[in-house]
Image 1 (spheres, rainbow, N blue to C red):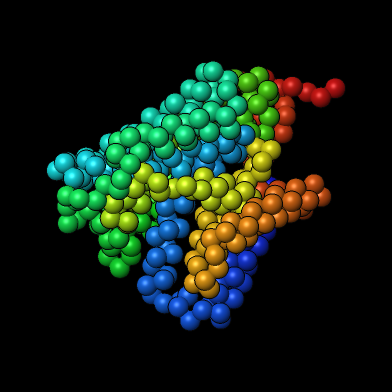
Image 2 (tube, helix red, strand yellow):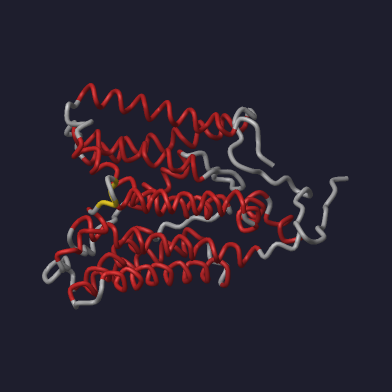
Length: 338
C-alpha cells in the first residue's frame, strides 16, 4: 500500500534543490546561463538513466557498483564501432547489449553463486574497466568518428536536448514498472522481507536477476550517450560514477534496508547531485573538496533517513509487511504472527 507522507521526502528534495540553485545563482552569474544549464542537464541525464534502474536494485536490497567500469567499456565499444563504419543505431544496440551482459553476469554472481553483491559488482567493476583499456589500447577512441557521432549526446529533439528526452522516457518506464507492474510489487516485497516473499511464491532469484540486468542495459545506454557527448570513447571515464548513482538513490529516499524508495525521488535527487557538482565547479572548488562535500551529503542523507524513519515520520515508497503480501491472481501463503 502507499504510505502516508511519502511525498514529504520529495517536497524536501525540491526545497533543497531550489535552495542550492538560489545560492549558486547568487554566487555565480554563469550558473543560470543557457550553456551552463544545458551542460548540467546532459550530465544529470546520464546519471539519472542509470539511477532509475539502480533504484529498483537497491529497493530489493541489492547494490551495483560496477556501473563506472561498464560505462567506460560500453562507451569505448560504441565509439570503436562508429570508427569502423558501423551504423550508429547498430553501434548503440551493441553497446546496450554489452551493458546488458554485464548485468547478466552480476545477476548470475549474486543469485546463482550467492556472492555478496558488493563483492560481485566490485569484481565486475575492475573487469570491465580493464576490458575498456584493453579494447581501446589504453587510449581514447577518437580518430575516424563520423560527423553525426555527437548527435546522441549533444543533439536536440525539437527544442530539447536528446539526453533529457531519453532520461524522461527512462524515468517514465521505471516509474511505471515500479508502481504498476507485478515486477514492481515483487521488487518491494523482496526488499521488504525476502523470506516472506519466498513463502508467498515470489521468484526472488529471477526478480533479482532481472533487476541487475536492467541496470546493465541502462548503463550501456548511458555509456553511449557519454561517449557521444565527449566526442570520444575514453577508457578512464566514469571513475566515481557509481558513487554518484548511490548518492542519488539514497538521497532520493531509497532505504539501505530495502523495501522502500521511489524513482521520482531518485530523479529529483539526481538533479540535486548534478546542480551541486556544477555549482561547485563554477565556484572553482577543487575536485578534492567536492569529494569531501559529496561524502558529507551522503552520510547526512543516510543519517537523516534513519532518524526520520526510526521516528515514523517519513516512509517512502511501499513497504510490504511480513505475512501480508498477497499475490494477485493466485493464492498466497500468509504467515501470521502468533
